[in-house]
Amino acid sequence: MVLRRMGARAVGPGIATQEDGKGRTGARVPAPDWVVCIDGASRGNPGQAAIGVVLLRSGRPVREIGEAIGVATNNVAEYRALLRGLREAEMLGARAIRVHSDSELLVRQLTGRYRVKSPALAPLHREALARLRAFARVEIARVPRERNAAADALANRALDDAGARG
Image (cartoon, rainbow, N blue to C red; front, side, top):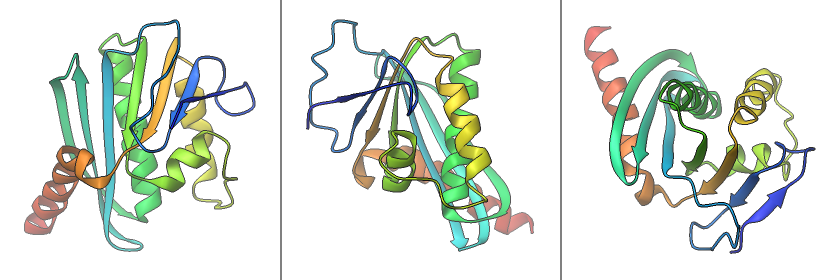
């Protein structure tokens, strides 16, 4: 699927989306060399939740984060993983990023294809849009779960570790 540029209504200039991970951008600006892979997990919905984030630069892991976040829904955990990944990317000096998520809801809400109806997600969505605007270029891709295995493993390991402590 070819990337679709999103206007200011969704996330702002320089934002693109790709839902199957197979398309080409066709953009004049070089593709981002930073990839932010995110995943949220919860055991129960809501239940004990955690996030997993992997930041790659030129295909190499730069930072891996797995953290328990307490009780939350899976969708809240997905947004919290995104926010943590964006903060880390900013701190590392990334200017152009590509976000990989296996969450259809998160990707489609960020690109304006789905409305945010949940009161619990609305403030997280607003914060995510604000953080995304800080980057010169953003691509958001929905990837198959198997292409997001590292972030998923970090979130599940954090859940396992939190269970062992609790």
